Image (tube, rainbow, N blue to C red; front, top):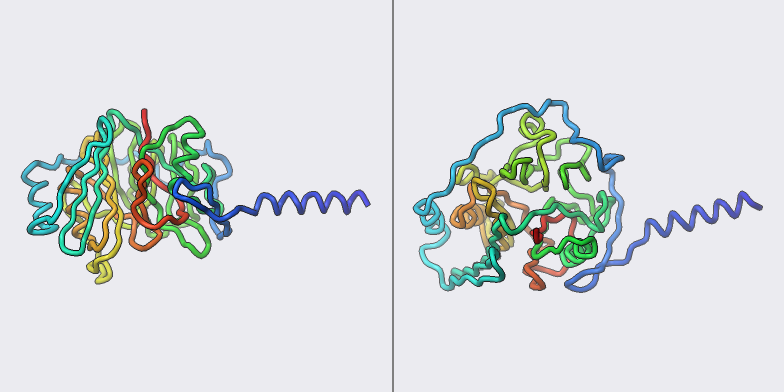
Length: 310
């Protein structure tokens, strides 16, 4: 009898842990749940795992000149139907651009006044759950970190809710997949300088030097120059999101764009002064949250990159 009761109690506990309700509302308290086959680090305090020693030379990116920025924007479009910039707060602005049937919203943050934070659904190692950008922003505030903006990061399989790549926050690995899945890495290393790198470069150069890091689909700008992405699908105009840092890591830009190709996304970021930039992906699950304003569909996502108050 006692054994039966014990089994019933354990079953109920497991069911409670597995159940999460679906996400509702822009400021999100919705949950989704679907477990995938992913390797998780057992301890958030573990150092980044890599066979390489991470002693490679850290890159020094060149800043984007005013002339190069203007040239990059001219490659996006000959002219803009709309181009306006709104100051949201000290050190935070939103630029809205439209041309033809394309639109782009570029959020720029001064990182002398703001910080970045890699975020995961419910603040845990992703276990097949999703959470809205609003929900992740709200959770950070509950934990005492006020987020002012967020953008969906790591590509996530929506059937299993399992993201690709890795997540590093506060210098510790929160999540990693079991193998190289083609993701690239993007963030800041210990002296506040930015980086974007491949899986191999990460082990050779950045191991144990990273403070905050998310993963992305492609590197689309390095040293202020566009990096080509192969494949005709990336020449198509789609909903796209990306982010980039200035060469010295003092500025972060996030972009949500409708009907953009990869080259346009890259040049918008370079034109905003970003020396290094990534494409997070394309599709209806992508979005950017600026304050309480959501750009994109109000859906649950995987990991995100937050801009937070210092």
